[in-house]
Length: 180
Image (cartoon, rainbow, N blue to C red; front, side):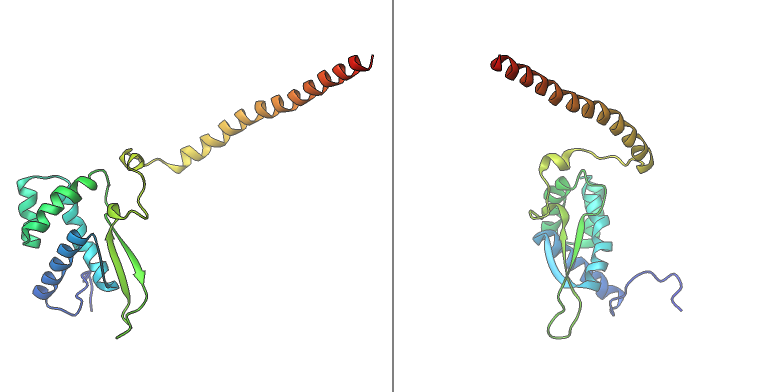
């Protein structure tokens, strides 16, 4: 039975799995996007996202913790300078997994995993991402919005109906004056 066994073993020993995930994380930090199997990508997301969260606060303690996982000075520098600054306002969800067609050789499920803030195609403007968003209840916003919309919609409709009638009256008067 596998009660409480939440880790995906990837058919590897613990040391082999740790080395694999460390190397994949280093490559993800350096290249911002890598292609691997779907199972490895899902395991990599669980492994890499806490490390990226630590990179948001650049302290010696956090650098040492991340170095204990990665053991690559260049990747640590890149993570804490470039990646950490870019994800500073994001409250999690630093990676995106996109499924790809199956691999030709063994028909393995393939996926591309990338850092969300480094994709120019899906990326939003810097102004939109810099604004801090707070979570609001849908219930309060939903109940307040319809009341406000009905209050503002009624006067606008009344003005529009009176304006054309007034214009028609002035044109009718002008045409009768011309005829006379």
